[in-house]
Image (tube, rainbow, N blue to C red):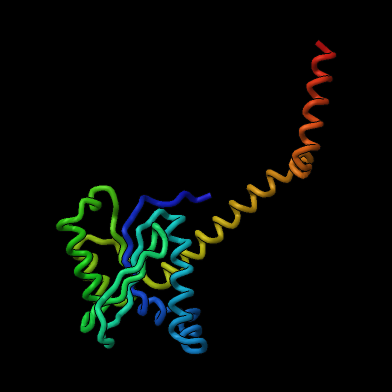
Length: 187
């Protein structure tokens, strides 16, 4: 099994990923933007936990007159909506600048920016971040999900391999006593 990589702080341009991948485009067009956001959050929640990433999915809210927000979903993932008149691009650029200038985490973690916006990824790389395209992010998230499923299946199969694992606790206890009695008689 492929081991998760070095911990990272990952910033994801949410609407860019939704708009750049057919699966999310289809959800957005047929079931609405909320459903596309939910599916992206679900996919990245599992991926972030598996990879031990601190992930922020950033969505533009700059056409809505409300303050920005950042809501933790799990210990590994948060969803951020930008302030009025702020784009996800400017949020990500500012986060990159602050990370590489002031954030102590920069010494132990890398930063990854996930977007297919060429100007955005060039800016992020200019700050020192790594870049991941929308297709690469989706592929990596799906691959890690498949690896985790295989690992869980393997664990379940190995536990079920022995007859004793299918017996209830009282029967296992009786068998253990019988085994002990047999060993004591043989000594």
